[in-house]
Amino acid sequence: MNEAYGRPNGGQLAPVSGTLKRIRVISGAAGSFRLQLVKAKQVNGVWRAQVKAVGPIINVQGQNQSNWDNDVYNVEQFRVKMKIKKGWRLSMSAMSTSAVRCSSGGDNTLIFAPPLTAAMHNATNTDGCWPLIEGVIKK
Image (cartoon, rainbow, N blue to C red; front, side, top):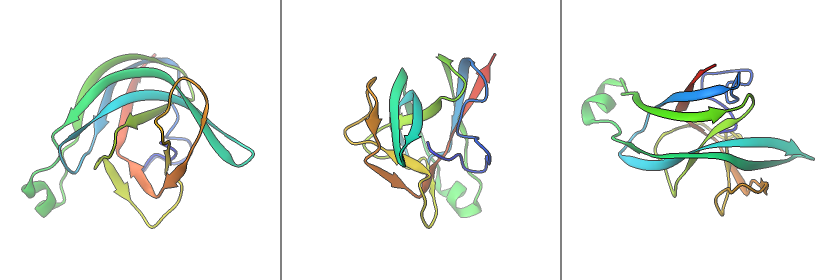
């Protein structure tokens, strides 16, 4: 996540160090992803990141037709227990996801192919879609 939807001024960064206790996800369809915590920084105009912690596989149900018809979307919650440091970001490792809201462009999401590892990697692309994932941290 390079920019958090609806959370200006650094909402994509963990505001404090502590324990990530829960994540919330809005997904358009059923699917899954591996939760990761990453550290990212921009060096000479190039985004670089590395995995700092690997979490569980998250299986989302997505929305039903009534949600789409009424523009009221389910927020799914998942309990996790992962140490997180101030400034780290949430990451979804998956081949594809519908847990995004897309715009007309921008670098809202950093894309890494091949997937990130514990070594520092350059982003291979960016995307104008915002990941719809949020964490709850307990100090």
